[in-house]
Each structure stands twice: as structure tokens, then as C-alpha cells.
Image 1 (cartoon, rainbow, N blue to C red):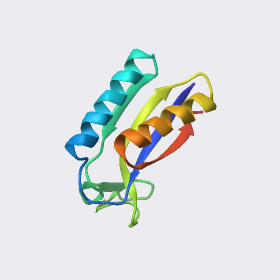
Image 2 (cartoon, rainbow, N blue to C red; image 1 turned 60 degrees about the vertical axis):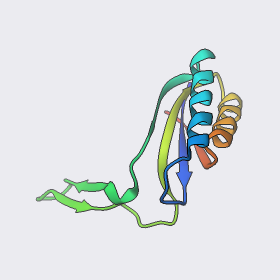
Image 3 (cartoon, rainbow, N blue to C red; image 1 turned 135 degrees about the vertical axis):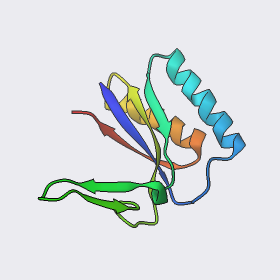
Length: 107
């Protein structure tokens, strides 16, 4: 089963060098233990573009979909046999990146 682990941040800054080292070490462990699928960091919400092509015209809006104090700063897609394992991995990921995370299973 695969899980999306979203990294939630409430600062505008990037990860510190110590946080990046911890994230790299965490990622290496995910790879070694067969849990790694994919991961990535995201640019700040101000770099976002929202596209809505549901109507007659395509609407393109600069900036995030929602203005909020917290934003999605990055993510992992992890392979885990069950939710309990995914939650343990996510807890270790939260510790490594020093941010809150949200865990959601793929359908």
C-alpha cells in the first residue's frame, strides 16, 4: 500500500542545513528498507499558479489556491504494509524535517 505523507510548514524559509542532512539520512533509510517511492520539496506558495478550465474560458491565477498560515512544503510517497507502519515512518519523517506531516493512503 502507498501513502502520501505531506509536509506542512508555517514558515517562509527553507530547511536548514541540519534539517536537510536529517532528511537525507531519513530518505536513505526509506530506500534501504524498501519504503521509498518518491519525494520532493515544493517552492513557496507564492510561486503557485492555479488553473481552472471547467468553464468556457481557462482561468489562470497567480498565487496559491488558498491563503493560509500553513502550506504544503513537500511530500513523500511511501510504501508500507499497513497504516501502523506508515504512521511510524511519518513520525520519523516529521522528526527529520522538523515539521508537521499529514498521512493519507492512496485509493
